[in-house]
Image (cartoon, rainbow over all chains, first blue to last red; front, side):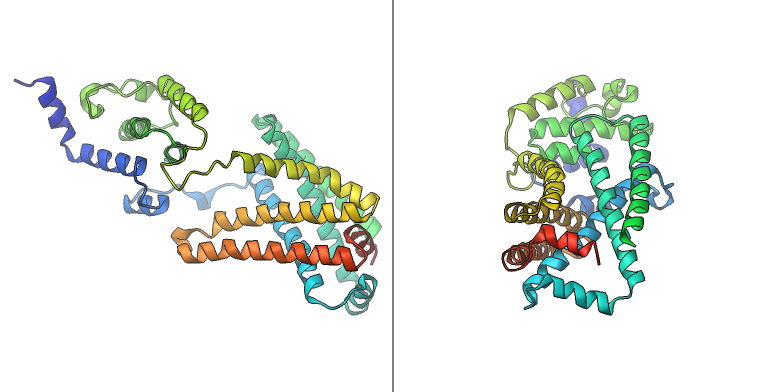
Length: 164
Length: 189
C-alpha cells in the first residue's frame, strides 16, 4: 500500500531530490563555498555576455565608472605627490609644468579632465535620482541618458573655448 | 540564482531559502523561461513531479514575497547566513549623502576659496573617491579569479592610497595655496 509517508520517502530519495536538498541546505545554513566556485562546480551555463549590443544604459554606466576612475587618479596623484615632494609653491609647480609640457597636450588634458568631471557630475545626478526612486522607466532612462550626453558634449565645447 | 544569494545573505531563515530554492528548481526543471518568482509555470507545479520534500505544495510567489518582506523588515542586522552580520544600509545612505554634499561643496569651494571649504572639499572628495575605488576593486578583483589573499591586499591598498591622498591634500591645504585656489590656477595654465 503506497501511503503518503512511503510515497514521500520514495520521491525524496531520487538523485535529483538529493541534489536539490544538498544544494539548498548547503547555501542556506553553511555557505562554505564561494558563489562562483559553486556555479562552476555545478557546471552551469553562462549567458553569451560577449555578444551584447552596446546600449545607452550600459555605455553610460561604464563611462561613469571610467571617468570616476580617471578623476580619482588625478586627485590622488595630486595629493600623494604633494605629500612626497618638498615643493610648497604651487605656482612654481605649474610654471615648471608649463615649460616642459607642450600647450597642445595641456589643452587636451584640460578638455578631457573637464569633460570627464562634468559628465561624471551629470550622470551622478541621474544616479541620485534613481536612489531617490524615480526615473526607472525605460523611456526615462533613455531620455535622461541622452540629456546627460548632450550636456557633456556641450560642456566639452565650452571648456575647449575657455581652455585655449 | 543571485536572488537566492541575496535572500540568504539578508538573513532569511533556512526554511524560506530552501522553499525559494525548491521553487526555482521547479521553475528551472520545467524548461520554460524562468522569470524570477511569479511565473505561471511555477504556480501550476504538480505535487508528484517536482513536489517539495515534505509533500506540501511549494508556496505561491505571493506568499513567498509576503514572508520575505516581513522577514526583511523585522530583522535588523541578522545577516548570519552568509558572512558575519553587517548591515550595509547605513553606509549606502551615507555614500549618497556625501555625493549630494559634494554637489554643493565643489561649486562653493571653487567660487569662494577659503581654508574651511578647502578642507571640507578635500575630505568629502577623498571619502567619495575612496568608496568608488573600493567598489571597483571589490567588483573586479574577485577571490574566485585572483585568490582571497590578493583580493584582500588590493582592498587594503585602496585604504592606504586614500589615507595618503587625504594626508597629502590636507598638507597642501596647510602649507600651500589650498585646493580651491589650486584648481583655479591649474585651469588657467
